[in-house]
Image (cartoon, rainbow, N blue to C red; front, side, top):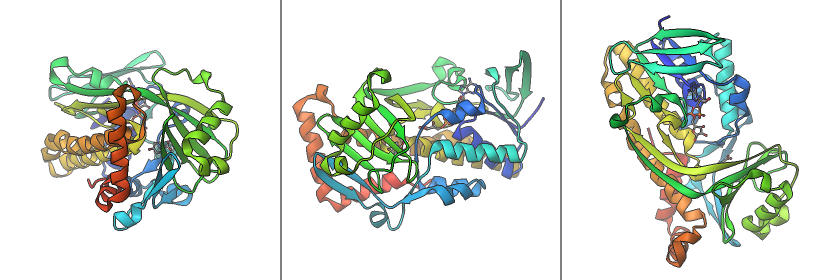
Length: 390
Ligand code: APR
Ligand code: PHB
């Protein structure tokens, strides 16, 4: 079998790329290790930048998001009993973000693929990218015990942090930068009314907490926990009690509690691989980089990679120019490093780092005081949160 582009991974990166290529007449096949239900069962991010919202519109998958998504004009940072509202709209000349779950984005993309009978192979085993350092790359995989081979022009590794694409690159050809934080986020999803109409990021002496949401009736909360925490050690009641402490009295008085429908611990990590192109294979999304979730940048960064990558591939086939492919890595990484910086900064500002001592705690306080008193500091935070241009 032959196609123009093989995409490995049917997460948001892979499906968005496939959708945009299809709309420009570029042929592709998507190979995904898991089943559609498994992919949709993963509870991930929930805040979309305006640039990503525009991309979903261009991809023709924005109708439900516009009906069900919640546009947010700001969010709050709470430290102890003090709350600071970041007026995203006012500080950025009218920009806002859209609260709409990654699961829903993925579902909308999957539905669009089904509607056009796109070539997505789920439960593809042993997917292997081959010969991408030459002119004739190919990908092999197994399905129902039969081995298949697809010859192609390009391979796009959209297979997440643990995928096979980055792992297939020879060691000497790639540099990896990594910072692992000594804590994780314990997340809880529950059918209760959100505590506030906007998100609340809290830094409390007990640790970070976040009050987020998926809809007016579905809430998502997180608390900072030590790395390696066993989720089963936390009962729902214990999580709600801790949230009441960390989010402050005003929130504690209003918070609605209920049974969890999902509970998990995610580690926090900053990671970048350089470069993102290896001959005829390009990496995009979590396959190439990870940010800690504090700045809500992971999914949005995947979308900006796909913007650069889809434009490059469409230009290659439409204008017979490889300039976009040649520049993909450099273009994408310039924006990635800025989002890495912002996510690291938000993480550093809002979490407890007892191992870094009293000086670090004072620096955090000074940073918060500066943010509360400086319009310029708030503009900087807001322009990063709504998303840098791409
Ligand atoms: N073969 C085929 N598919 C694979 C393989 C493999 N060897 N390894 C992983 N995959 C699939 C996974 O099952 C998953 O469906 O690749 C997909 C990768 O999806 P994500 O991990 O969601 O990554 P991505 O699409 O880049 O999404 C952006 O940014 O911060 C995050 O929460 C955000 O998950 C989101 C991500
Ligand atoms: C979420 O709702 O899952 C969420 C929101 C904002 C973040 C991180 C996660 O910064």
